[in-house]
Length: 459
Image 1 (tube, rainbow, N blue to C red):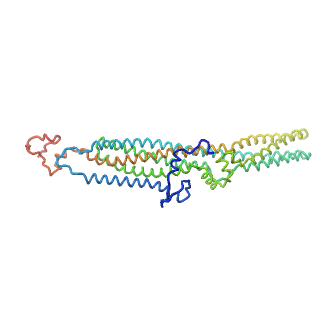
Image 2 (cartoon, rainbow, N blue to C red):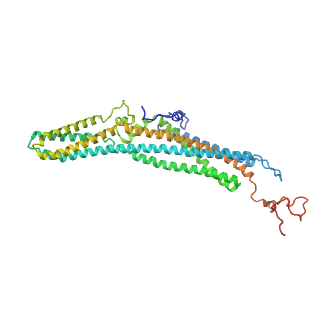
Image 3 (cartoon, rainbow, N blue to C red):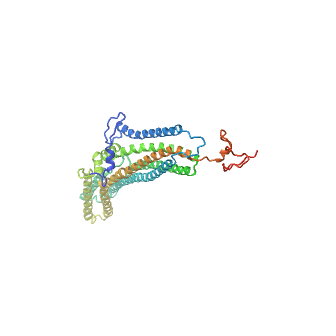
């Protein structure tokens, strides 16, 4: 049985079945083993595929631009026919903008899903830390309360009952039982002194998630700015906006392919972990904490095949508390009529035992595997369902962004060529010295009707 509510999803199975290879293209098992060099090389090779895609994209864009700029047939002199392909440029830009906008929406959704999954992981770790802290606190409180009772009330009771040897023996029996309970309880604080803290892990995860979330938001905003500059540049037919858009597109294109490689490697590694997380989590926790495999298996597996490693201590403690309670009742019946001064320490001891029994029942509930196992399942669901799904949406966002930016970069030169000159008066300013300033057959004294916007310059 796995954790409650967690089963590997179809995406986990699909990604886990993908072939893996090291740098020598030798097959690598798909089991999650980040400490092995071959497995690390397999994930790096997955990330390197995005680098290969970036290189091919840049080569394609460069070849297209060189072919467009250097291999165009020259326009005939004086031709006013618009360059062909204007509709193609328009539709290419529209498709690129639509793909970019869809990618931005998918990116925001994927970023939110990933953040929700990591938040669920952090919440589960914090709840587990609260449970472990509560166990340590209850054990410490009960041990201190029983120790204080042994040092004060039981010592006072023995002094009061000193004339009756059998009553002193009963009081000393209660002392031994209280000391035995304290000794048994100290072994129940299994997480005390462990160097690994779920709280520290949750803080580290939240710290990394903040920077990851900020990086993706900046990337999404950059692509949004690219879309806005593209719209403004095409609407206003501004060449300087097109130049800014080109530079930003190249930057975002590189960032998109880089994030795609990181997302792909992370998704593949996470699918390997999520397909069978128990062995890796057990081994890692045992290495970091030094706890016995019986305790860790009880909490991480929590099934009938694994017995409670604290059952014997709990049973002995419960019996000892019951013995202390019966001995105190017997002393109250026999000692108080003869030694009225014994009533006060006896009542204080009974109160201590009652409080200890209440805390003991609460401790038994906390030590059961259900609570921590539930936190373990919540952590896996957040990491292997929401976070992995968000990563896949971010991967799709990066892919759409790369395709849209590559299409836009290939369309910009044609759009540039279709832009009209910004200053039509250049035709009559003498900038084209090789062409006659006046059309043939036109009287120099006549108005330049064929060139609206041109005016005769005073001599």
